[in-house]
Length: 255
Image (cartoon, rainbow, N blue to C red; front, side, top):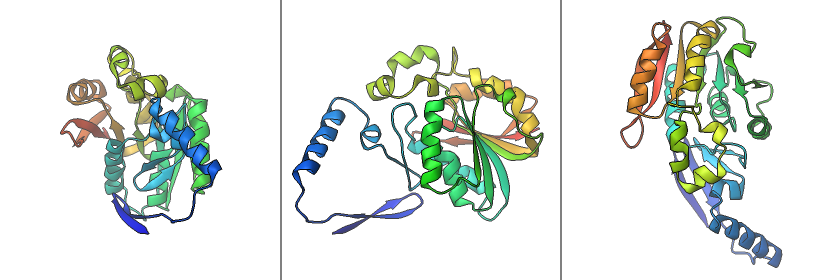
């Protein structure tokens, strides 16, 4: 039996066979079900998540890709469509889902993917190999943007999904997120803007004149704060709302 399921980037065919299931497979299924019942996120149980219609390997130590972040990738592809040769950076790359998707959607692009977590970069490396993208992406482990070696004004754009949740809100997140996903990928400091301040200081040196900075944010109130912080180095050119009508992404242009 074949069932076709629509995804944002196409149709995925799922195949079920009517064969008997062995005892070993049954035991494995039960172990997985027990882990899920105990609260472990399904993506960690399966070691896999879907993002923009592609499969990505994930596990403890890396953030699980969110559907809302697909909107940021879609926006990047509007500005830099397939066939246009571009060089970009993916900051706080995590599993590498953003970088890998953009590389697969645009065969003429290349990327520098940065994260301060070695655990996360191990998953990014797995996904780069899984999608055979090793010749077009460089993985860099670094926590300070100013310490990353990138040629001045060599990037067409930088895309980022950084930690942006205020520290005081972390204890109130849903259990699956709070208890299992890495806080290093969630906690953005006192007001959630700790890393953005470093971005606004450093990224103008990396991005070409008129290039873009595309980022995910916490919502409407944080958008106002970030716009004031970005002046005069970046100006907002677009605000993208998520499925709940909240400002979730801002597209900035280097001033």
